[in-house]
Each structure stands twice: as structure tokens, then as C-alpha cells.
Image (cartoon, rainbow, N blue to C red; front, side, top):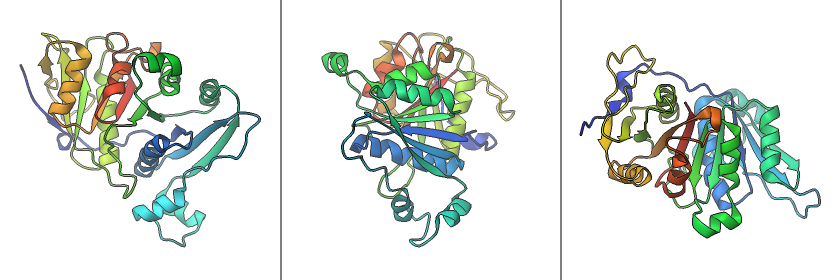
Length: 288
């Protein structure tokens, strides 16, 4: 087994190119966890953030969007009495709350994404399996599978990398499973840049391949003259990925996916979908 960690301080810092982030919300506690990540990423990337809620045409009392000003004040990014214009000038990004009437939330979200350029989706997911998933389904997985947009999944029971209370970021180690197909180099670089943008400090990158011979991975970073080393493991793919995530105590799993087939048609079938249902931390799915 070849084992190594690539430290982010070995390469030049690069901004993760985010101009527009979309977070579909249902106003649940799970959505609040995901929104905290979306907001903190928007702050780090100075990206526009769109909170999107789909409601039936005949609706009762409308739910309340997250209180952005309260969160920013609580996190220490703004003062209590700063104006909207002052906040925008200070932080360099805007948040918009969007309500869409429709009876099919999945289709309404996809229609919005078709009409608005989006660089990142941030979704809460319950991580359902078995009969419950067959009966209830997963809006998050369906939207991501059909959108081909980089997507950050925040699970209901997984630990987070952004604190709702303080806005503090815990992103020290990242696991990226790789395979020969889809070719992972661009996705690996994107995950690395995402981690640098959000954490703003050194991030350990573990590359993992399930098999006997790992693919060579060359990034666009000139400071890396040799292929990045890859950890080799054997056994069931999903179980091996989850075991490695626990072993290395990672704060994020980055999954290169076959983007031309949809963001979740990835890495030996539906591996990404099965990983995100049981992942101990958020999962970033990136089309390769």
C-alpha cells in the first residue's frame, strides 16, 4: 500500500471560481445545517447566494427564510446596526430569497437551474436507504443527478464542517476517491481549490483508489512535478471509502463524477449516491 498526504501549502493558493450558489430549502432543521454551509462558502468566495423555496400554488402560512443578518452578526462578520449597503460593500456578496410556486419541487428547482447559471448547489439530504428511500425518494439526489452541477451534500446526522452557531470552519482533511473513469484530475483540482477557498489554510488531501493499481493524477499546479500519490485499498468500494473517511477523520469527501451523465452517475455506478447516504461528513460531488 502506498500512503501519503498532499498538503495544500505545497501549491499556490487559487480561488474556487464561484459566482452563484443555489441552496434549495424547505425551512427544516436539515436545511438550516445546509444553509450555514452555503452562507459561509458565499462569504469565503464572495459569491451570490440564492435561497430557493418551492411552494404549492395553494399554500397556507409561508415559511421563513433563514435570518441572514442575524447569522452574520452572530458569526461576527457584521455589526448589529450596519445597513444592507454597508454589509454588501464589506463582505462583497448578496443573498436573495426566492419563492417559486409549483406542485413538483424537483422539477421547479431544475427549471430554475436551467434558467440561471449556477456554480454550486448546496443541499441537505436525509441519507435514506432501503424501503424508506423507495417510498419517499430524495429530492436532493434527483436534482443533483439531473443537473450536472457541482453539489455539496450536508447530511442530517453527519458532522458538519461549518458551525451554525459560530460560523467557524473545520476543514483540515479531505478524502477524494479516484478511479480510471471518470478521469479524476480536474475534479481533484477543483476539490482542492474549494477546500482552500473555504478553509483559508492548509488542508490535507488523501487520494484513495479501491483496487491494485491506481490511476496517475496530474494537476494543473506547476508546483507538483510528480503524480500525486494514491492510497490503495481492496474490498467493497462504498464500504472502503466510508472506512477510510472514518480512519483519516476527514471533514469532507470529494467525489469525482461522470458529469456528462449527471453529477451522481459516478465512480462505478451509483457509488456517490451510496456514499453520501452514509458519509460521516459533507460530500462534494464534482463532475470530472
